[in-house]
Amino acid sequence: MQLGGHRLNGVRMVHGRHEAMVPWPDHADLPSHAVALRRDVLDTELRRHATDAGARVLMGHEATGPIVERGFVRGAGLAADPELAAGLPRVDSVRSRFLVVADGANSSFGRAVGTTRHRNWPYGIATRTYFASPRSADSWIESVLGIPDAAGNPIAGYGWVIPLGNGTINVGVAVLSTYRDVRGVNALKLLDAFAGRIAERWEFNPSATLKAPTRFRIPLGGSVSPKMGPTFLVAGDAAGLANPFNGDGVDAALMSGRLVAEVLDEALTTGNSTSLQRYPTMLSDAIGQFDKVGRLSARFLGRPIILRPALRLGLHSDRAMGAVLRIAANELRDQRPGGAERAYAIANTIAKFAPNW
Ligand SMILES: Cc1cc2nc3c(=O)[nH]c(=O)nc-3n(C[C@H](O)[C@H](O)[C@H](O)COP(=O)(O)OP(=O)(O)OC[C@H]3O[C@@H](n4cnc5c(N)ncnc54)[C@H](O)[C@@H]3O)c2cc1C
Image 1 (tube, helix red, strand yellow):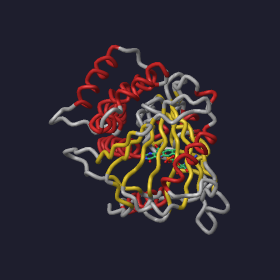
Image 2 (cartoon, protein in one colour; image 1 turned 180 degrees about the vertical axis):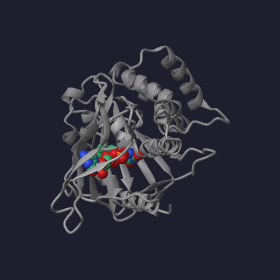
Image 3 (cartoon, helix red, strand yellow; image 1 turned 90 degrees about the horizontal axis):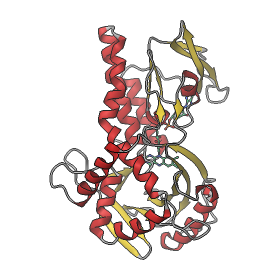
Image 4 (cartoon, rainbow, N blue to C red; image 1 turned 120 degrees about the vertical axis):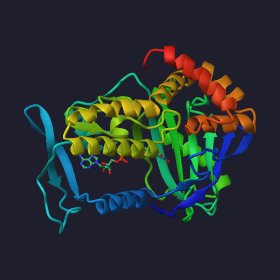
C-alpha cells in the first residue's frame, strides 16, 4: 500500500533545556523513518484495501447492537445515518457466522457482547488540536517530557508536535491515569498551556486553533477483556491494545486485524470455530509481555517521587533519550543490545513476578 504522507526521520526529545535529536530506531524488519498521515487518508486506503479483497463496506451505517441466537452472537442490527447514507442502499442488519468487534476506544458494541475495561488498569487521557505553522515541513516529531501541571509538578505523560507537511501541525498532550494528581489535571487547560509554551518555537498563534481541541480516553496495554467469545473476536482499541508507553494504537490495531483475519480464515476454511480460541494467545505472544511491562512502568511513573528522578536520570544524554524512544516504540533490538534492551530486560523480569495490573 503506497500512502504518501509526510516523512519523519525521528523524534526531537525535549526535557527542560535538554534536547536530543533521536533518529527513528534501526530495526531489522521496520523502516528507518515514520510517516505522518491524516486519519481520513489512512481510513480511505484501508477501506479500499478491504473492498479490493472482496469486503462489502456499508458507509453511514451504525451497528446498534448484536443479534444473539441461542446465546451466540450471529450478526448486528444496523441504523443508517440519514445524511451519511443519503443516496446509498439502506441495510437493517447483517447476519454472520463470526463477528469482529472493532468499534474503537468507547466500544459500546463491545460492551453489548460482554467486554469490560479493567477499571484499575492504566488508561491514557489525550487532547489534540491543529495549528497552521510555517514549520509544518519539519521532519522531526517533537516529544516534550516533564511538562508541568497547574501546580508546577511534571505530569506522567508528554506533549507532542507532529508536523504534517501540509502547512499544519498536530499538537497534543497525553497524561497517564496513574499520575498521582490526575484528578486535578484539566486536559484542555494543559493543552492550552503546552501550546502557549511552544508557540514561539513552532511559529504559530496559540489562540488560532484550526479545530476545536478534542479530549479522548485511550484504554492501554490490553486492558479490555475478553478478547474473544465463541463467535466473535475483539480488535484494536475495542480490545484496549494501544501501547501503554505512548498511547499509539494504530500499529496494534492493524496487527490485531491481521491476527483476526488469520484466525477467521482458518475457522472458515476448516469449518472449525475452535480456531478462534488461538486469538488471545497469539495476541499475548505478540504484545502481552510488553503490555505488562508498560502497565507496570505506568504505575511507577505515576508517582512523582519516582517520575522526577526517572526524568532526570533517564534523559541526561542523547543516548539515554534514544533508549527511552526504543522502549516506548517497542523497537528493541535482538542484535546489538544496548542500554534500552538491558533496562527493558530488568523491567521484564520484575513484571513477570508482579501482579497482573
Ligand atoms: C488524540 C489522539 C492521538 C492519537 N495519535 C496517535 C498516533 O499518532 N499514532 C498512533 O498509532 N495512534 C494514535 N492514537 C491512537 C489511535 O488513534 C487508536 O489506537 C487507533 O485509531 C485504534 O484503531 P481502531 O480501529 O481500533 O479504532 P478507531 O480508529 O477508533 O476506529 C473505530 C471505528 O469504528 C467506528 N464505529 C464506532 N462505533 C461504531 C458502531 N457502533 N457502528 C459502526 N461503526 C462504529 C468509528 O466511527 C471508527 O471509524 C491517538 C489517539 C488519540 C485519542
